[in-house]
Length: 192
Image (cartoon, rainbow, N blue to C red):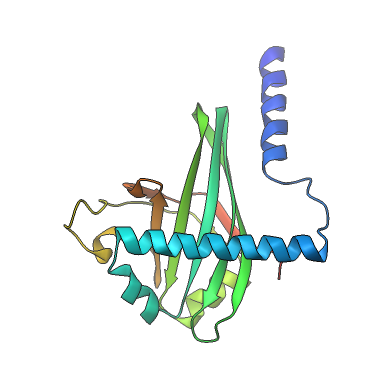
């Protein structure tokens, strides 16, 4: 029993280090560089989305706004985390809001996974709620990914809340399963 507690404590320490918990204040140059990296990631994520679900371009163009996130998931024995950053973009004002995300849980396995998420917001209320109040995703959604030229954006975008749609992408394309359960999203006070 004592060995299990030591192992769990060690794993928790590793997860805490990977989550960026001990990050200090950033200089102005570091903040600017972090913003540029997030904007680059957002652009790449949208290009990836358009490649795998071309119909999403018009859906995004007609939306009130969107948010893009790059996530790294780490699963070490019984502890799993997802940690990432992104931005929410208001299509009406053109303003970008920098954000963070984190998820922790228990799950058997070992490995690291990298994926991207795109949220599309139908209206100002759901966009503002996401950005200003933080948001905790407590839903799990499954979707059939687009295979070859069959299907369309509506068949692969998951509605995770009224007026909020989700695409989850991997390096291989649209994820067959879009799971965001237990994930918290909030403004990055340091970058905004």
